Image (cartoon, rainbow over all chains, first blue to last red):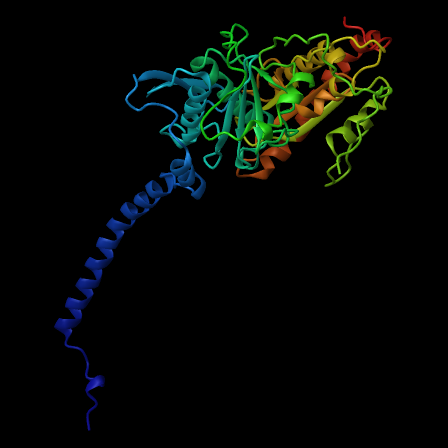
Amino acid sequence: MNDPTNTPMNPRWRAYLIVMLAIAVFIAALYVPVLRRRLHQAKDVPTVSEEQARRELTQPSPTNPNGPVAKARMYWSAGARDGSLMPVNVDLPLAMDPAPRGKQVLNTLLAGPIDAELRTLPPDAVLLAFYMLPDGTAVADFSEAMATSTPSGIQSEQMAVDSIAKTLEANVPQVKWLKILIHGQEVDTLAGHLDLTRTFLVNAKATPMPQSAPIQKSKGAIPDSTNPLAPPLKGGAGASSIVGAKKPIAPSQKLTPGSAPGKLTPPAKNP
Amino acid sequence: MFQTRQGNENPSFDDRSAMANAQRGAVFVSIHVGSTGLPGTARVYVMSDLPSAPDTNGLIPWDRAQAPFLPLSRRLGDMVQGFLSQRFKGSPLNAQAAAVRQLRTTAAPAIAVEIASVSVEDRNILDRMAPGIADAIARGCSGFRPLYVVAAVNPGDRP
């Protein structure tokens, strides 16, 4: 009895099958590079992280969207891999008050340029609060991601701080100094190298803050009582700059502990 | 030469400064590989300006120990950077200023050398840079030495 499965294939059908297979291989050979290109493009599209999505939902808009649109100047990386920055004009309905205005421009800076390669700040970082102190010090409080996701290194950390300082200088004329906090706390360094215990000079010729406004906070900022910055700024060693100028030290300011530290005695270690 | 760490330990900034500050007539060089920068280049950083308000007790405040040494640090930094730029094309010609935490509490001429970068695909590229980096630092320190001997008499005085 003949088994139908053992019947040899008709030579004509075999030829058809071979031709079909050859065509399939040919089409696949043409299509694979297209697929590969699409895969690369999909990889380049920045994905919206959870924190970014949360930021978009939770950040209150500090301005009247019907207000006049002004050209805000953002400083992102120039892409030269030497730490240099490039100004980019962005149309924004900028607020008149320095605190909400500063928050607006920093949020725009955080959102990043069109080319993600030119970012200066990590995409996951969130601006938690932005204050203006009466002496013209802007206090920018960022989420933990600012410290954990900034690439470690002097150049990369300096570029991050420079981009914040230059963007504030270009858009908020009242900002004289910049103090950066991470989650409401002063930290030693941004990502292991750049000193964040100091304040950074933004604009030595800043417009003085109005006397009637002791501390300006942007919307959504933490209450004054939780602001850990005010006392350290008055008495801390916050006289420094990123461009070489010096912040004058008031005679009453104490820059050393009450008890003499002895000759270069290191401070007590933090637990 | 005195190393502030021998292996994969992580002494604090103050611990490292304490070790450096205990040496007499020393220079402090911090070397690390950065995350960014043109691969195959090296940059020298010195501390940006620090206030050096004179204290009535005549002691140098720990938090600003670098302040009296800034001019010397800049000289040392420029010398080392000069040799690095000869060795590694694309490196800057002069040392740059930055608020480097480790340098702030160091009471000696102090520089930080950042090598670019961890982003290189082949680690051998960085390994091959090591002798050139060491040579540039050694030559820079050697050229700097006559300047420092004069200053070492009273390191608190600004030249």
